[in-house]
Length: 331
Image 1 (cartoon, rainbow, N blue to C red):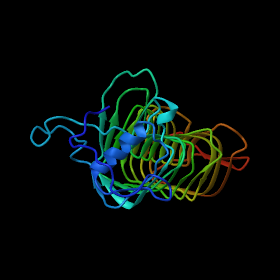
Image 2 (cartoon, rainbow, N blue to C red):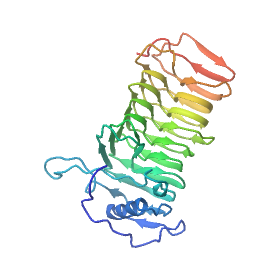
Image 3 (cartoon, one colour):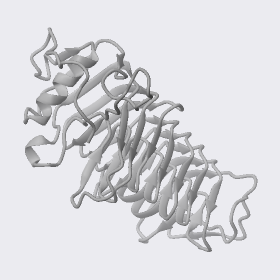
Image 4 (cartoon, rainbow, N blue to C red):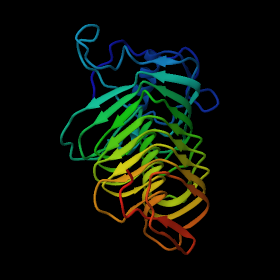
Protein backbone atom coordinates (compact mmCIF):
# COMPACT_ATOMS: atom_id res chain seq x y z
CA UNK A 1 0.00 0.00 0.00
CA UNK A 2 1.19 3.51 -0.74
CA UNK A 3 4.69 4.44 -1.75
CA UNK A 4 8.00 5.71 -0.50
CA UNK A 5 8.32 8.39 2.12
CA UNK A 6 9.11 11.83 0.70
CA UNK A 7 11.65 12.43 3.45
CA UNK A 8 14.10 10.20 5.26
CA UNK A 9 12.89 8.58 8.50
CA UNK A 10 14.83 9.77 11.52
CA UNK A 11 15.43 8.09 14.86
CA UNK A 12 14.04 10.10 17.81
CA UNK A 13 16.73 11.76 19.89
CA UNK A 14 15.18 10.66 23.18
CA UNK A 15 13.95 7.33 24.53
CA UNK A 16 14.87 3.69 24.01
CA UNK A 17 11.44 2.22 23.25
CA UNK A 18 10.86 0.59 26.62
CA UNK A 19 7.53 1.18 28.37
CA UNK A 20 9.19 3.28 31.07
CA UNK A 21 11.34 5.17 28.54
CA UNK A 22 9.38 5.36 25.28
CA UNK A 23 10.67 6.99 22.13
CA UNK A 24 9.75 10.70 22.21
CA UNK A 25 8.34 11.52 18.78
CA UNK A 26 8.05 15.13 17.67
CA UNK A 27 8.13 14.95 13.84
CA UNK A 28 6.64 12.92 11.01
CA UNK A 29 10.13 11.69 10.10
CA UNK A 30 10.53 10.25 13.60
CA UNK A 31 7.10 8.66 13.33
CA UNK A 32 8.19 7.09 10.02
CA UNK A 33 11.26 5.64 11.71
CA UNK A 34 9.13 4.20 14.51
CA UNK A 35 6.76 2.65 11.96
CA UNK A 36 9.65 1.08 10.06
CA UNK A 37 11.07 -0.43 13.25
CA UNK A 38 7.75 -2.03 14.16
CA UNK A 39 7.29 -3.40 10.65
CA UNK A 40 10.80 -4.84 10.80
CA UNK A 41 9.85 -6.97 13.80
CA UNK A 42 10.45 -4.70 16.81
CA UNK A 43 6.79 -4.88 17.72
CA UNK A 44 6.99 -4.31 21.48
CA UNK A 45 8.63 -0.87 21.35
CA UNK A 46 6.69 2.02 22.86
CA UNK A 47 6.41 5.68 21.92
CA UNK A 48 4.81 8.93 23.01
CA UNK A 49 4.12 12.05 20.98
CA UNK A 50 5.59 15.30 22.25
CA UNK A 51 4.15 17.54 19.51
CA UNK A 52 1.32 17.53 17.00
CA UNK A 53 2.30 15.63 13.85
CA UNK A 54 1.47 16.74 10.29
CA UNK A 55 1.82 13.89 7.80
CA UNK A 56 1.02 15.94 4.68
CA UNK A 57 4.58 15.81 3.31
CA UNK A 58 4.70 12.04 3.69
CA UNK A 59 1.25 10.80 2.66
CA UNK A 60 -1.03 12.75 0.37
CA UNK A 61 -3.26 12.76 -2.68
CA UNK A 62 -1.91 13.84 -6.04
CA UNK A 63 -2.94 17.44 -6.66
CA UNK A 64 -1.05 18.20 -9.87
CA UNK A 65 0.90 21.07 -8.32
CA UNK A 66 2.63 20.59 -4.99
CA UNK A 67 2.15 16.83 -4.95
CA UNK A 68 2.74 15.21 -8.33
CA UNK A 69 2.48 11.65 -7.01
CA UNK A 70 -0.02 10.04 -4.65
CA UNK A 71 1.56 8.55 -1.54
CA UNK A 72 -0.40 6.50 1.00
CA UNK A 73 0.61 5.92 4.58
CA UNK A 74 1.96 2.45 5.29
CA UNK A 75 0.30 1.33 8.55
CA UNK A 76 2.20 0.56 11.74
CA UNK A 77 2.08 -3.22 12.24
CA UNK A 78 0.54 -5.80 9.94
CA UNK A 79 -0.59 -9.41 9.76
CA UNK A 80 1.95 -10.53 7.15
CA UNK A 81 3.29 -12.66 10.00
CA UNK A 82 2.69 -12.69 13.73
CA UNK A 83 6.08 -11.05 14.33
CA UNK A 84 4.85 -7.81 12.73
CA UNK A 85 1.71 -7.24 14.84
CA UNK A 86 2.16 -4.24 17.12
CA UNK A 87 2.30 -5.13 20.83
CA UNK A 88 3.66 -2.02 22.54
CA UNK A 89 2.21 1.14 24.07
CA UNK A 90 1.62 4.15 21.85
CA UNK A 91 0.62 7.26 23.79
CA UNK A 92 -0.49 10.25 21.75
CA UNK A 93 -0.17 12.38 24.89
CA UNK A 94 -3.19 14.45 23.88
CA UNK A 95 -1.57 15.50 20.59
CA UNK A 96 -3.14 15.65 17.12
CA UNK A 97 -2.14 13.74 14.00
CA UNK A 98 -3.11 15.66 10.87
CA UNK A 99 -3.50 14.65 7.24
CA UNK A 100 -3.32 10.87 7.48
CA UNK A 101 -3.93 9.65 3.93
CA UNK A 102 -4.54 6.11 2.66
CA UNK A 103 -6.04 5.28 -0.72
CA UNK A 104 -5.75 1.66 -1.82
CA UNK A 105 -7.90 0.85 -4.83
CA UNK A 106 -6.77 -2.78 -5.16
CA UNK A 107 -9.69 -4.90 -6.34
CA UNK A 108 -8.33 -8.23 -5.13
CA UNK A 109 -5.79 -9.14 -2.49
CA UNK A 110 -6.68 -12.74 -1.59
CA UNK A 111 -5.55 -12.56 2.05
CA UNK A 112 -6.81 -10.45 4.97
CA UNK A 113 -5.11 -7.06 5.11
CA UNK A 114 -5.43 -4.00 7.34
CA UNK A 115 -5.64 -0.28 6.70
CA UNK A 116 -5.39 2.57 9.21
CA UNK A 117 -2.80 4.60 11.09
CA UNK A 118 -2.03 1.25 12.69
CA UNK A 119 -2.56 -1.89 10.64
CA UNK A 120 -2.68 -4.71 13.20
CA UNK A 121 -2.23 -4.03 16.92
CA UNK A 122 -2.37 -7.35 18.75
CA UNK A 123 -1.55 -6.37 22.35
CA UNK A 124 -0.58 -3.35 24.43
CA UNK A 125 -2.45 -0.06 24.17
CA UNK A 126 -3.07 2.89 21.86
CA UNK A 127 -4.33 6.03 23.54
CA UNK A 128 -4.73 9.81 23.73
CA UNK A 129 -4.74 10.76 20.04
CA UNK A 130 -6.89 13.14 17.98
CA UNK A 131 -7.08 12.74 14.18
CA UNK A 132 -7.65 15.80 12.02
CA UNK A 133 -8.34 15.61 8.26
CA UNK A 134 -7.68 11.88 8.00
CA UNK A 135 -8.78 10.23 4.75
CA UNK A 136 -8.73 6.43 4.63
CA UNK A 137 -10.13 4.45 1.70
CA UNK A 138 -9.86 0.83 0.56
CA UNK A 139 -11.81 -1.06 -2.08
CA UNK A 140 -10.90 -4.76 -1.82
CA UNK A 141 -13.10 -7.25 0.06
CA UNK A 142 -10.16 -8.47 2.14
CA UNK A 143 -9.35 -5.20 3.91
CA UNK A 144 -10.31 -4.40 7.51
CA UNK A 145 -10.37 -0.62 7.60
CA UNK A 146 -10.40 2.03 10.35
CA UNK A 147 -8.91 5.48 10.82
CA UNK A 148 -6.98 4.53 13.97
CA UNK A 149 -6.43 0.83 13.27
CA UNK A 150 -7.47 -1.92 10.90
CA UNK A 151 -7.50 -4.75 13.48
CA UNK A 152 -6.92 -4.39 17.22
CA UNK A 153 -6.65 -6.83 20.09
CA UNK A 154 -5.03 -4.03 22.08
CA UNK A 155 -6.69 -1.63 24.50
CA UNK A 156 -7.89 1.57 22.81
CA UNK A 157 -8.70 4.67 24.84
CA UNK A 158 -9.15 8.42 24.48
CA UNK A 159 -9.24 8.56 20.69
CA UNK A 160 -11.07 11.37 18.89
CA UNK A 161 -11.79 11.45 15.16
CA UNK A 162 -12.80 14.92 13.94
CA UNK A 163 -15.64 15.66 11.52
CA UNK A 164 -13.34 16.55 8.62
CA UNK A 165 -12.13 12.93 8.54
CA UNK A 166 -13.61 10.07 6.54
CA UNK A 167 -13.20 6.32 6.19
CA UNK A 168 -14.46 4.12 3.38
CA UNK A 169 -14.05 0.42 2.70
CA UNK A 170 -15.90 -2.73 1.69
CA UNK A 171 -16.20 -5.12 4.65
CA UNK A 172 -15.32 -4.51 8.32
CA UNK A 173 -15.16 -0.74 8.39
CA UNK A 174 -15.17 1.49 11.49
CA UNK A 175 -14.51 5.08 12.45
CA UNK A 176 -11.98 3.95 15.06
CA UNK A 177 -11.27 0.31 14.10
CA UNK A 178 -12.27 -2.10 11.37
CA UNK A 179 -12.17 -5.05 13.78
CA UNK A 180 -11.42 -5.13 17.51
CA UNK A 181 -11.46 -7.52 20.46
CA UNK A 182 -9.89 -5.46 23.26
CA UNK A 183 -11.38 -2.88 25.60
CA UNK A 184 -12.35 0.41 23.95
CA UNK A 185 -12.98 3.43 26.16
CA UNK A 186 -13.60 7.18 25.95
CA UNK A 187 -13.54 7.36 22.17
CA UNK A 188 -15.44 9.70 19.84
CA UNK A 189 -16.03 9.45 16.12
CA UNK A 190 -17.33 12.43 14.14
CA UNK A 191 -16.21 11.17 10.73
CA UNK A 192 -18.36 9.81 7.93
CA UNK A 193 -18.11 6.02 7.74
CA UNK A 194 -18.99 4.19 4.52
CA UNK A 195 -18.87 0.52 3.60
CA UNK A 196 -20.86 -2.48 2.48
CA UNK A 197 -20.98 -5.15 5.22
CA UNK A 198 -20.21 -4.86 8.95
CA UNK A 199 -19.88 -1.10 9.28
CA UNK A 200 -19.81 0.81 12.59
CA UNK A 201 -19.25 4.32 13.89
CA UNK A 202 -16.73 3.10 16.47
CA UNK A 203 -15.87 -0.42 15.24
CA UNK A 204 -17.02 -2.52 12.32
CA UNK A 205 -16.72 -5.94 13.98
CA UNK A 206 -16.25 -6.39 17.74
CA UNK A 207 -15.61 -10.10 17.91
CA UNK A 208 -15.08 -13.04 20.28
CA UNK A 209 -14.60 -10.85 23.30
CA UNK A 210 -15.81 -10.71 26.89
CA UNK A 211 -14.48 -7.17 27.12
CA UNK A 212 -16.20 -3.80 26.84
CA UNK A 213 -16.87 -0.68 24.85
CA UNK A 214 -17.33 2.02 27.50
CA UNK A 215 -18.05 5.76 27.33
CA UNK A 216 -17.87 6.02 23.55
CA UNK A 217 -19.97 8.13 21.20
CA UNK A 218 -20.54 8.28 17.48
CA UNK A 219 -21.65 11.55 15.85
CA UNK A 220 -20.82 10.66 12.26
CA UNK A 221 -23.13 9.45 9.50
CA UNK A 222 -22.68 5.68 9.07
CA UNK A 223 -23.73 4.07 5.79
CA UNK A 224 -23.58 0.43 4.70
CA UNK A 225 -24.88 -0.65 1.32
CA UNK A 226 -25.59 -4.16 2.58
CA UNK A 227 -25.91 -5.50 6.15
CA UNK A 228 -24.73 -5.19 9.76
CA UNK A 229 -24.59 -1.43 10.23
CA UNK A 230 -24.56 0.29 13.65
CA UNK A 231 -23.63 3.54 15.34
CA UNK A 232 -21.31 1.82 17.81
CA UNK A 233 -20.66 -1.56 16.14
CA UNK A 234 -21.81 -3.14 12.91
CA UNK A 235 -21.50 -6.61 14.46
CA UNK A 236 -20.98 -7.21 18.18
CA UNK A 237 -20.04 -10.69 19.40
CA UNK A 238 -19.84 -11.13 23.18
CA UNK A 239 -19.20 -8.30 25.61
CA UNK A 240 -20.60 -5.15 27.15
CA UNK A 241 -21.54 -1.76 25.76
CA UNK A 242 -21.86 0.74 28.61
CA UNK A 243 -22.36 4.51 28.82
CA UNK A 244 -22.32 4.82 25.04
CA UNK A 245 -24.36 6.91 22.62
CA UNK A 246 -25.04 7.28 18.93
CA UNK A 247 -26.17 10.61 17.49
CA UNK A 248 -25.41 9.98 13.82
CA UNK A 249 -27.80 8.77 11.12
CA UNK A 250 -27.45 5.06 10.33
CA UNK A 251 -28.35 3.55 6.94
CA UNK A 252 -28.13 -0.06 5.78
CA UNK A 253 -30.04 -2.72 3.89
CA UNK A 254 -30.44 -5.25 6.73
CA UNK A 255 -29.51 -5.57 10.43
CA UNK A 256 -29.40 -1.84 11.12
CA UNK A 257 -29.46 -0.09 14.52
CA UNK A 258 -28.44 3.01 16.45
CA UNK A 259 -26.03 0.98 18.57
CA UNK A 260 -25.58 -2.45 16.97
CA UNK A 261 -26.53 -3.78 13.58
CA UNK A 262 -26.30 -7.46 14.52
CA UNK A 263 -25.17 -9.02 17.78
CA UNK A 264 -24.67 -12.12 19.91
CA UNK A 265 -24.44 -12.18 23.73
CA UNK A 266 -24.65 -8.42 24.22
CA UNK A 267 -24.93 -6.65 27.55
CA UNK A 268 -26.20 -3.10 27.08
CA UNK A 269 -26.10 -0.70 30.03
CA UNK A 270 -26.94 3.01 30.07
CA UNK A 271 -26.96 3.56 26.32
CA UNK A 272 -28.54 6.22 24.13
CA UNK A 273 -29.54 6.25 20.47
CA UNK A 274 -31.00 9.32 18.75
CA UNK A 275 -29.92 8.97 15.12
CA UNK A 276 -32.27 8.29 12.23
CA UNK A 277 -32.23 4.57 11.40
CA UNK A 278 -32.98 3.88 7.75
CA UNK A 279 -33.36 0.43 6.21
CA UNK A 280 -33.00 0.47 2.45
CA UNK A 281 -34.61 -2.95 2.00
CA UNK A 282 -37.82 -4.57 3.22
CA UNK A 283 -36.53 -5.98 6.51
CA UNK A 284 -37.72 -6.52 10.06
CA UNK A 285 -34.13 -6.36 11.32
CA UNK A 286 -33.88 -2.61 11.84
CA UNK A 287 -34.32 -0.92 15.20
CA UNK A 288 -33.79 2.27 17.13
CA UNK A 289 -31.29 0.41 19.29
CA UNK A 290 -30.30 -2.84 17.61
CA UNK A 291 -31.13 -4.51 14.35
CA UNK A 292 -30.98 -8.06 15.70
CA UNK A 293 -29.74 -9.93 18.77
CA UNK A 294 -29.24 -13.64 18.10
CA UNK A 295 -29.35 -15.12 21.62
CA UNK A 296 -31.67 -15.01 24.62
CA UNK A 297 -29.04 -14.40 27.32
CA UNK A 298 -28.29 -10.78 26.42
CA UNK A 299 -29.27 -8.12 28.95
CA UNK A 300 -30.27 -4.48 28.70
CA UNK A 301 -30.78 -1.70 31.25
CA UNK A 302 -30.81 2.09 31.36
CA UNK A 303 -31.71 2.40 27.68
CA UNK A 304 -33.10 5.42 25.85
CA UNK A 305 -33.88 5.47 22.13
CA UNK A 306 -35.40 8.54 20.53
CA UNK A 307 -36.31 9.37 16.96
CA UNK A 308 -39.04 11.90 16.31
CA UNK A 309 -39.73 10.74 12.75
CA UNK A 310 -39.52 6.97 13.17
CA UNK A 311 -42.69 4.89 13.06
CA UNK A 312 -42.69 2.14 15.66
CA UNK A 313 -45.80 -0.04 15.47
CA UNK A 314 -44.47 -2.38 18.16
CA UNK A 315 -41.82 -2.64 20.84
CA UNK A 316 -40.97 -6.16 21.95
CA UNK A 317 -39.46 -7.06 25.31
CA UNK A 318 -38.05 -10.58 25.64
CA UNK A 319 -35.92 -11.89 28.51
CA UNK A 320 -34.65 -8.42 29.39
CA UNK A 321 -33.66 -7.85 25.78
CA UNK A 322 -35.27 -4.79 24.25
CA UNK A 323 -35.57 -4.93 20.49
CA UNK A 324 -37.38 -2.11 18.79
CA UNK A 325 -38.29 -3.10 15.26
CA UNK A 326 -39.06 -0.81 12.38
CA UNK A 327 -41.56 -2.34 9.99
CA UNK A 328 -41.47 0.86 7.99
CA UNK A 329 -38.44 2.86 6.95
CA UNK A 330 -37.64 5.96 8.95
CA UNK A 331 -38.09 8.99 6.75
